[in-house]
Figure 1 (cartoon, rainbow, N blue to C red):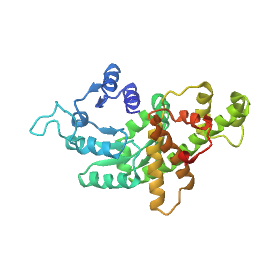
Figure 2 (figure 1 turned 90 degrees about the horizontal axis):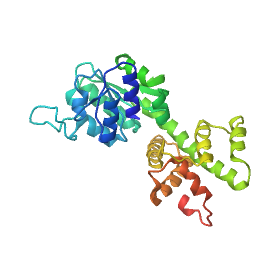
Figure 3 (figure 1 turned 135 degrees about the vertical axis):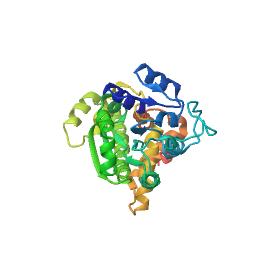
Length: 299
């Protein structure tokens, strides 16, 4: 998603320097007119906005505070070990677009504020397709000053921007969204498996449900792909599992028992544990289509 967001920034006329541990992502960035940076600090140097889109909080720490991978553009005795924060210019806004625990986002905001750095806890929703099309929704916890400073980047990458409070609030709303995403994705797979096994036309089922009370955004997106046997990875089982885990832990911390979330987590754990974690979340349909007499491993 980070590469697609960089492409949107380039298409909007902004200069972009980027770093990724995936060499192919850098090749794509350069092909699109961007600049390859040697590491996080090089990417951050001179930037008005530092956009961080990585898998989890541990990777955020690595990017921002190092030690990072080789950063040949940095001078000095710590070259190659600087995090991006060490290279930020005055006034640069750090926009964290990753899905991370709310408590971590709030604490990170405090650490950056202590350094005089404006921060946006701004996870996005819309997946890879939304990133490609500039149709992401940004869910932001930030000061008004931080939002103003990153306005051009937010507008280039998204089509809806919601400011929901201060750092921590953005990730709180995102984890609630991800609880629903995980549950609805699993239910879409279960519903399509039922349609296939029950002998009705899956495409007709999709048409009917789309106009009925049982529809959901995830059903509308996932069901046609399931019917077509398209399991290209837009969102992996492990990513869904990671995000749902954040929601479950946060629910426990505030005294909400995530009953349905735990059921879905059990399904995702079983799929990941059997070697399917890197596959598309749509591939969960296979678990429902597999005849079982004992469902304990799905609980």
